[in-house]
Image 1 (cartoon, helix red, strand yellow):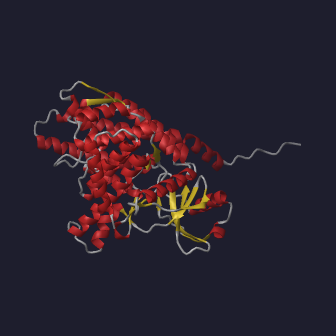
Image 2: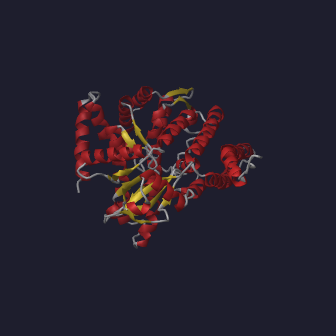
Image 3: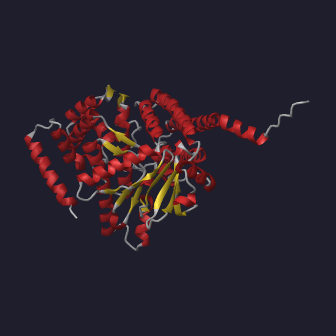
Length: 484
């Protein structure tokens, strides 16, 4: 008797081959597009040397920025995943050309949504119950979809308040790790040819942080820890942190309270909708309060606790009633070692006081290894410290352009940059981007000075009595300022 014939499911074979070759396809697409964008700028660098008219040079650069913006947008939009995070990092008004910002700002929360059928399967598999057994209502359309997960509004059985259900996209982790390794290779090339900065260490820290984002149980614990800390050290917390529904958390599903608010990206539209003059005193006061609240929360988290939310991009910030701020998404958090926390506190004081000698010493203490052959090395080092770790822009400057020939980063090579400092660097730059977007130029170093003084004083590293007195005065003023 002949054995039964072997039946091949052609669709199944195609799907398995597609999954197997997908990382290679993504790698190929990344390198083709990245090289195209890079060579466009290198060619223009040569062309502008033959043009003597400064106005024409600027027009050439603007045109190149517009072309590159379209290409970067297409790459990030088509590939999705990790590249949406890259768009969030580089698409900031203080860092990138205006043409880039205009295109990339629309990519927040624009990842393709997972079908409701798949979401339902993930939920029921993770929670061990049917979706109708857990929820009275579950919105089929997500509130938003990001690179790692999407969120739905729902209501638990027997409850009167709504919740948010965060569900991880299946199969996204392997693709994101492929993307990061491609970026690491590109970063190695760039730091050897064009940018005198330890970009590779930055991408290593990104790899570590993004790896953590796939564990929602870790995220829930981080959210609870930060929520408790902010409520403990303030009479009224400067930012709202959603409450976790503790028995509804797994590695791939996270249920939390629903916070009603407007994304900070839509603040201008909301102000206009209410008939408020966007350039008037009411709007200015609201924006000032929003930025002060965010900045105070971050100063306390970084300098007082050392454990902080490390992803304050606009998609993670809601503006609630009374200009209250809610901070969402705790997938990326950082727990600073004590030495780095105190070293950064010392650097904050140096920047706030304009002390270039102390800033250089703080760089060494933090493990930032630099090399410089320029004149006025200490002055350039201080400018570099301001560029990297403070939010304030120089007078009349709207964009820092850190990689221009006149930038301190070009004049002083950063040969080694501790991976763990990247989260602080990114947080400060995101806060700066928010401040530029809100039209407010402020110094986080100035606002954080009393918190840094307190941190160093508690560690026995703050000896100057005059500074201690000033720190107490700042603390009193801060307390009065934040009183309801």
